[in-house]
Length: 98
Image (tube, rainbow, N blue to C red; front, side, top):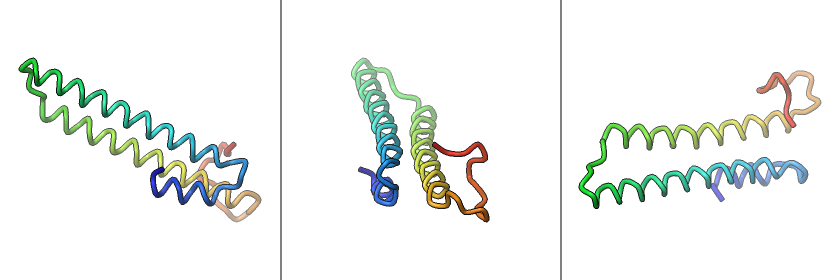
């Protein structure tokens, strides 16, 4: 489990731990996409097709950004859960959380 997700998993109350697991599942899906892309690029290379460097950089940067966004959104959700009932807390999600 990703270190930050593990920390958040530990802070979540029992009935909310599934949020951290869901985020971990999303990250695993991204790893699978990255692996499939790697295999495609490798098979293209065997066929003599060179990868476009700009597209490869954009692909990796996009995956990195999505991973960071997932963790940031989980952190915000945990913050809102920790401050439930606190009338002075400014919620991260105006429409509420689960």
